[in-house]
Length: 225
Image 1: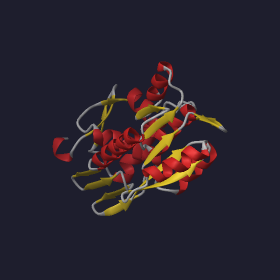
Image 2 (image 1 turned 90 degrees about the vertical axis):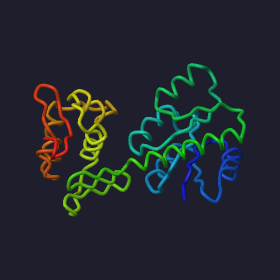
Image 3 (image 1 turned 30 degrees about the horizontal axis):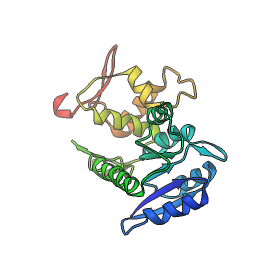
């Protein structure tokens, strides 16, 4: 069962959307402000967020990057902000779709279903199996020779990027930008080196996580080393 979180401060519209988008395959959760939305995201397994821009305790455009970074789920902006600059800002901030009010309920349903379908298709690629490794990024379960390994969020991000780009050299700058994406804190230049070392040690992956000196790192299969 997929759950859709609707973040909207108009109570009438909010309750109407919750009823309209509920089905045999989906259930809905309501949030009238960003504070409640944060709580719902942290406690429930949310598959998709429908997000208004103008909310009592903040701006949906500012909240959008947080959702994408922390949960990586699709977000559809549903707002009265219909200027071209608003739409561009929303899409550039990470929105998967942008719908302006007033809107067609049929179109909204179709776009919600499209995003949920895309998510299901992506999940099919969330499992990486190679050599003695099984990495399930959706379930956050990782094993080496059948033995479970605990990875931090940062280590998981690094591993996902490396395995998604197996056989490709990724520069240090690109890895830093993609792992520490919020830009809110200074990232020590040794942070990546430390994370790589910890990941190698935990996975016993000295031969798999290859250092390309002067450039960056690459994930390679053992028979390709």
